[in-house]
Amino acid sequence: MEKEITQLDFEKMGGLVPAIIQDSVTQKVLMLGFMNEEALHKTVDTGKVTFFSRTKGRLWTKGEQSGNFLYVKSIRQDCDHDTLLIKAEPCGPVCHTGADTCFGEKNEDDFLFIQYLQDFIEKRKNEMPEGSYTTTLFRLGVNRMAQKVGEEAVETVIEATNGTDDRLIYEASDLLYHLIVLLTSKGYRIEDLARELKKRHK
Image (cartoon, rainbow, N blue to C red):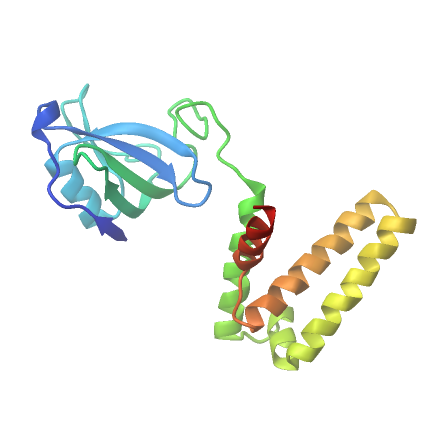
């Protein structure tokens, strides 16, 4: 858990500070609650988001009844020292209505799976488990990985010009996967490509 907290001003709102809860992966705002000093200490100690419930008049750990806990990844305070931003991993729906967020938004972003995939591929590279196709690619070396990128690129072109849309998506996905494996072997990430494209766009 990352923490960047100095001296919070609990007195400004009568002993409470607002805590914005954000999904650590999708970056969606999940909910807003309030914490007193005790709630903040319990959140840090347990790794589960705990609020001070103004209606119940007591500490309340999110998920204590439903099991839909919010597991803390990082805690930061704002520039005025009176608001918290907590990035967390939700375990199930956040809202009591069953919605993903208390603002009625879907808590998903398919594009962010690409980052997760690269993290997973990096884990494969570090652990090299037996029976894994990704492990096999790393063991075969950069020449074979580069060759696979070329093969998948050709198959993608074929499907784009003479195939079906479904096969185009399938082959392009294979191309992207093998490209990420190749990048990982060279110590780079997909974000490095994003930075390069962003630089060119300017």
